[in-house]
Length: 300
Image (cartoon, rainbow, N blue to C red; front, side, top):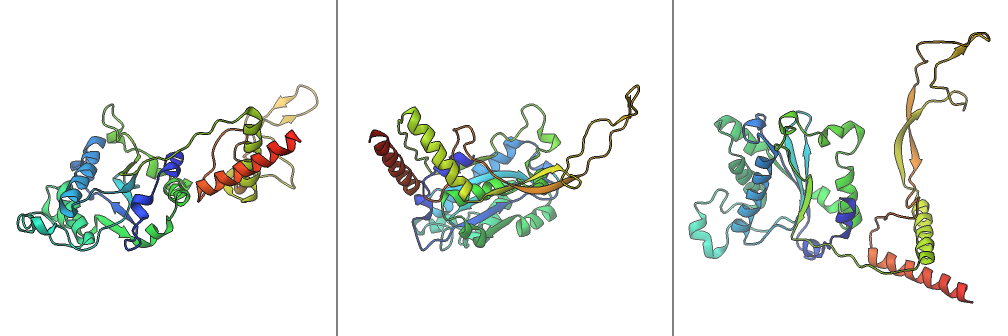
């Protein structure tokens, strides 16, 4: 997912300076199993929203989406997109649009009405509550993701912390064969742009070293869990041997305490891999100049 999101061309989404990106959230009502008994039903809801959007705003959705789960097991979708201006319904279709759900509404109100209508919970009270609190449009979060690296970092970190690991756990009703959700992420109306360049083995090794050193200079760290040590000396996790004769073993090993620390992240440790950057074209040009200088010094 990280590699794919970094290779996407976001120009179709962010080219218009008058339209601000937003993070759109689509949730389900309290009794979510009634309307989403399996993953295919939830995916149908998401596709139905895209079709309604095309009819109401006369354009397709350009977005990146991801599926996650709440602690109660209910699914929800995150969409990075650029909400439209004005009200729903095109001028030429205004007469027949009056019968549409959410016709003539701004995007935030249209989204609430249409998403509740798509999910269509049979209980009127549950459906009314879902329409009031089933969607969210956060422009502050959308403004954070202004380049491919920030998009990939946001969607990777969102729900990846240990405290939010439940967001990646499929609920039991969806774990039966054929009931799963399928893909957890995707994108609409965006294309991946990647250019392959053939290099020699020596150039590949040199490029990997340069990228590895550059990544180390960024000071990126990650949180890991390690065994706690006393006075800097590691504690043995094996059974303690007592006595000189017989080497009597203790059945229960001592309890090992754990602690969380931050360790530096190492990229391209084996000479293979990739790094996420804000501007891939500029980074590739700088790397190319560095390899050209190295090749010139070798020839001399």
